Image (cartoon, rainbow over all chains, first blue to last red; front, side, top):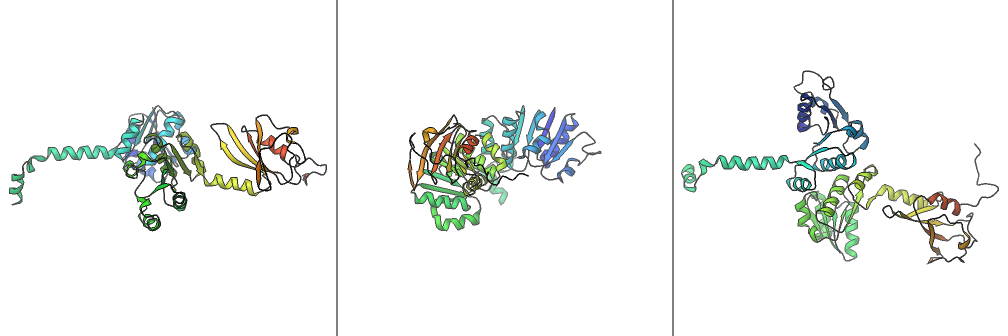
Length: 155
Length: 230
């Protein structure tokens, strides 16, 4: 698979490394040239030496997307630090370039849910955190099981 | 009408002011606290603080009953997505989006955000209006409907002045719809004789501009207009 990842922060770079290790072709696009260093964290060879591709440019710029290989991408991951950018570029990948698999990281749970229903594959880290926190609180409940216990404890 | 304006920058603020004067119900949403406080001094309860990218902020502003949403923030992605959500989720009948960077215009079109307005385009049109060399002004461009309306000012050296409208070789798919003369407009008939200083409006299929430009442009005189034979 040829995978294009736009936004090479902590999330994007980790996914990129994992996909490359699994033997996929991986291309990253990021506005910040410095992000390249993050890609190589924990690697014993350079990103390009391992077959990776890295392009500097904005996800909204058609030229940059094309240079990064969007036209031949089998999968597209929008993982910049901006929800709006991710939603827009994911739709561009879907509608204009007809990339078969398009995934967008959306922090805002309400919009993640709505766009999911519109046919966009969304991943919402906030939703995941909320669910995990809630279940962690429930599972860790024994201490504060009843009001009387709590009263004893504070005393 | 109930109109929600997103962004209380120069454009949004003035727009809101005009709309309120025309007795529309208006809510402006601004996400910069300082800007909000400034604008609130004048617009009072007509301005609301929050990030309109968030659905609950739009809902709090009453988007469900809005007749129109106008997104004029300085951020194209915001404008695009706010309009997309307004149109597709809340089924707002009319949307208008501002395009800050003309290079993003195709993205607005791709997401079905229409109309989208770019200041650069408007200035270009003004330029066409102000610089006589252009001689032709786009008044309306209905891309979907494949229709365009243009305005032309007939100058002294214009080739069609003194001629009957019925005798003009108008390109197929174009029609003169109005003549403005001495501040008054009328619909020309075949017997109308065009005069210098007339402003004529023509409706046409896109792509016929050049032919019209030639027809209504300077008459081919023997001397040529300073043709530089370089």
